[in-house]
Length: 45
Image (cartoon, rainbow, N blue to C red):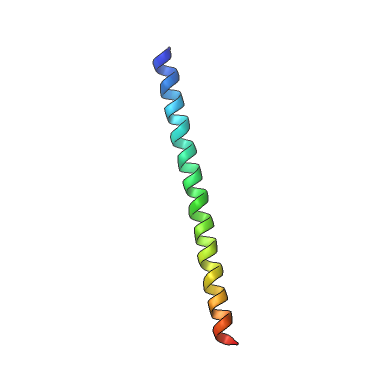
């Protein structure tokens, strides 16, 4: 029983880490696209 609980806890933390990593990746991608757009806009002016 205790082993099962620890296993569940480990899997939960793993899934949480994966989720946060995905969120960070999306945020990074968005900021990259935004910065690229800003650079393009500045070059046009």
